[in-house]
Image 1: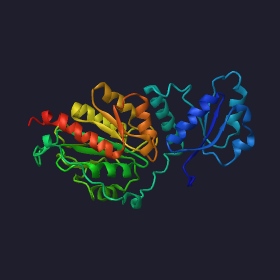
Image 2: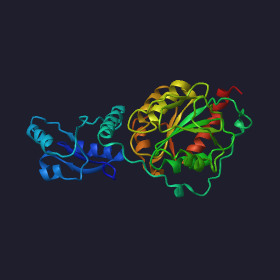
Image 3: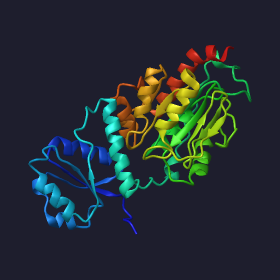
Length: 341
């Protein structure tokens, strides 16, 4: 049997800066750091110990450390991964792709970090009072008609609490629907549906083939297979697993929704580890599709929204309630024309 803890990574690099950046990337993805060492600090006791599940090695001066690298492969008892080379600027899209390659390599060898348990008790917060529906939008919803505005809500660690606060604050009658991509252990979708719908004006629809989203409705993207919504607001299931180290892939949901709906979609990234959503955020920005994110100080873990912000693709940041306020104002200013009312 494998370790019961989240996989622990030992980092060996001959650059102090590279060790620092690699360790931050590993921890942001939910893995533990067992060791962070320069080559001269590595001995056989460390290489043969049981505290490391995989070694990630980034050596810039290969000529200087060639003998060490040979010995490393001979002596280490844990698998060895070669890194992705010098880290790009953290404010670049290339950095997000560099991080993603590391995550994927680690997942292939030691598996994904264990999903965080859903803390239902923490979700039982005092009810957030819903915002008033702007006068411009009153009476504008057509029940049962396909939604013309469908946004993606992306969340991971700490996300369920933030998403609930956001949904509770939204007014009844808002002409928008949502697809939620939440990193969570399989089997928790029904629990999340009950928790998120308890005080919300929105209703939840199963992500089943052919089901259609209307304004005021929400679908949770399934863990097991790729899902998107087409231009007719109908569910499309692809029968294949999500790309990358996370399920569902927020990047993939955002990208597919942008392809199908264009500027009739948008994305809000909430609390979470890793950088899921940052790559698709750049695509959305290029298509003039809004991407917003939760502020770091209101997140349980801000790595995911921070990664998107670092690319310069996030046009608004706020607390969950502030995001709800901003979306309500945005709808009043933009959605009436889209609805042709």
